[in-house]
Image (cartoon, one colour):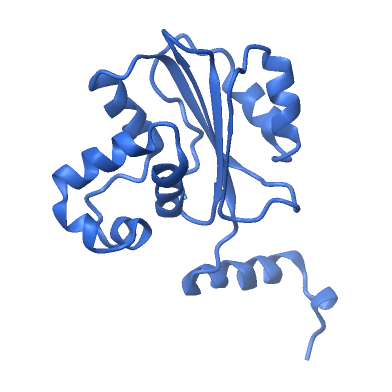
Length: 177
């Protein structure tokens, strides 16, 4: 029998990768930055182990969560019969991409003048999944990044790799769990 410190990194990666098959996945973070014509900039951050859990967490706690629940339940009336997470995981027609949902909100009358989403953030060890937090009144971007560093180890790297964005729509990172 090998002790944990006797395995090389590839073996440990294989071991940890296998945990996802039983539902134990590595938590990842998502940060949504959005601006409204009538409100101050806002930042919402989520940590979860699966995109379906991220969407369910946003529907339950997010600023536009009630609007999205209403939209989804009008399209899928059977959603009311199960928990949000069970419904989303069990229905492959419901998109778990937060960018799709912010696009939907923008097209359906929400006054979002600009927004972007950063995915695949590594949470600090003190952050437990699932986790949601909203920052309101985010007028100073430097203070926002400093606050986000308390939650994610790679937030600066992800934001630098994005660069400035002239587009309205989401430019989420390439990782699609």
